[in-house]
Image (cartoon, rainbow, N blue to C red; front, side, top):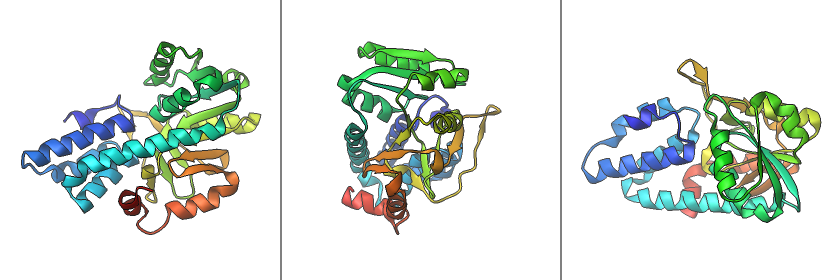
Length: 260
């Protein structure tokens, strides 16, 4: 199955593929649920996949289009909330290719003088991001992953996406995010992360080797300067408040029902 073996798509694109798969099976009277655990186990770090499938199983397949619509709304809200981060003549640094980071750059492009991009091996998604930004007229500079020090010294802050936000507000993201956040902390450069609250989980994530390589790592909350979410912007002083919201009873079900 293509979804199981997909190693190139990010969590947003993979979520769309999963929703299309479920819709196709449902409309043709096939049982998609027998593939649920296989899909989740194939991409354990991409928490949004599990949460979307759990919501579908709980509410029913007739809500596929509504779930898809709400995911888009949550992304749009997070991108709009990124405005609070940008001032004039910003140079930012990013890693991998987050669709929300890309959206935030487009939202604030009039305030950005340069986007610095790490190549982001082993998949080198950063190279693709640089090309897409250049097509939009954004000035960019590509750095080898070993040049974190130099990339940071040419940046005002770091903006990265995340594939999961855990209890305690650690994040899971593309491998290389942890050393980037650690270096940012050491050099006194803010490290911000953007995503949607549907990527929250209180479960332990076991990292998987993909073709004998780790593709994700964990960044503890003490290295993070702030979260940009569909729920708002949360600086370090609001971390305990954010943690309380995310860990609330039936949080994921409630955000689907309320859209909040």
